[in-house]
Image (cartoon, rainbow, N blue to C red):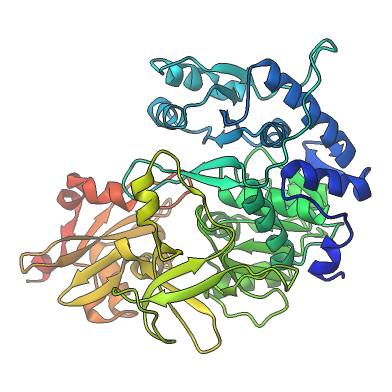
Length: 528
């Protein structure tokens, strides 16, 4: 196995742009597969040609430096070609969740002021409806046929611009208040994150990275795509995550690495073992959070040797990870991420108190980060951009602590703290503990007003299909595992919980839902 630095040194130096890194990798890996999609593959040389054709098409559409183009599609090679082509033109890709409804899509397309939209055929009606009423009608193009039939008469694409600090992508966060913010990243930020991912997962040129997460997600773009490019490796694009077909896909594609989120890992652990396909080549999984059971199932039953936990946000991708060679601390966020080149510094992290002063190991405060892989700001929102930083440190809004070994540990979102009788209670802890009940599919705890001031705890619970569970049984489960003050007073059994586009529970929507309190059983009233 090559070291991460040896992997990067296989290729000529690049100039910090997507175009320059693609040329660098093609200079050595010209005939190596770069993109694989449903049985079709594109070598590095072929991707260079596809990007040139895509750029010619976009220029013909009038795209110029600084323009924004929306991409609302399931994972597809055309999204990758468009991304590289737009970056070469100095333009910006705005990936949009293809599952968005009309109003959600309209907000993003309008806020980003897109000049055009590339979308899948299935999303076309939503895009057309979303574009109605915009200040100017964007041009529309289908992702399935976007760059297939490029006429010879089309003017040649210009040479890619040489500006590594040019904004190349907006990532719209799901937010905690309802309105997503457009996180802006430069080409340099993206490629540095990709190089960091080579170190994080010890990627090799012959690795085959399976991408089942959507290309509107920071993980898929900054880790899977940019990591594959940085290593000169192969990216296997799947339209979307399919739990029932996952292991068959892993076996058929020869995937060696995959990135997951907690929901996907949990689903796979609970699927029928008859779907598991032995003899695969999958060796490495990146994601979070992983608990002891996740490690046991994936290593012992699914025979995947290495699971790496990490932490990042749309604003600061790849800030922390458990070291690939070890030591590993299960459930931790890991240690500050490193670049393959020790001369290149990546993330610095501290724990800060409410007064902004840094705290010693063991004390809980806000995690703050200083890193070159950082957003340029929120598009059209200078106030929120200013509020996100203090003295050059990005304020994550996450409460955490660092131990004596420099491993960081997540405690809760600052906005996910329930203040009860003078104590801070982590909603995330309650979610995890109640979610571990064998009859529970998903749980989410939120604060509700107390007659005594401060908060009481309300937990909304979705049961697994065919399961029954009394409200009091949930409280008893908590009593056996948590301090008495953390036992919920209100329990609501619901059919589903609201989610953000990145599959997190949308607790801000729950807090706004007055009917949730009405549905809940007051266990204090029942027992009194």
